[in-house]
Image 1: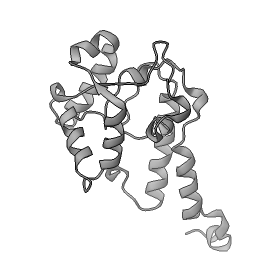
Image 2: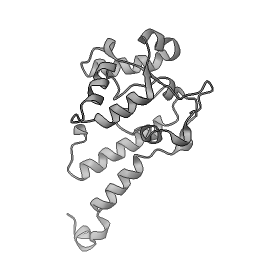
Image 3: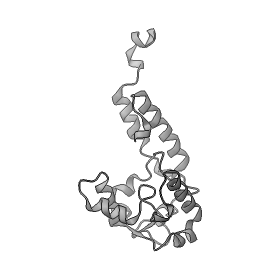
Image 4: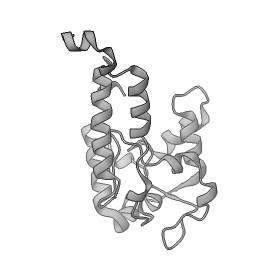
Length: 177
């Protein structure tokens, strides 16, 4: 610690102040959304889980991620095949498959989903009552896979970089989160 930091401790970021900053960084400004409905028409859960894996998480109340899997499965319906999704968003399918391959997962087991409430014009049919996960989406994180052209991508990546910096400041290893 420098002499200046010892003599003026308010210059050091407080853990509470950093926690508040992370909380704000997790909320991406909604004006960045281009309102195309793309993320509602073609979604994945945790990047690359299969429908069977999601159902298993949703069914096990003791599993980490149980509630989010249950909520996701109640709103999103699986596509019949990746080929069907590829007709609509081939670049996104490629992005998701590449991430799965880097993780050592079989990309052929990935399930893609569509929201049962998205309207033809891309708007949400239950916008005022949409689930919490939809209200908070997207989540700035290193594993978030954005659709090509997503208005949130640049800010989300930037926010996650700052969150990782804060984690390191607090002595945490960002790769564990």
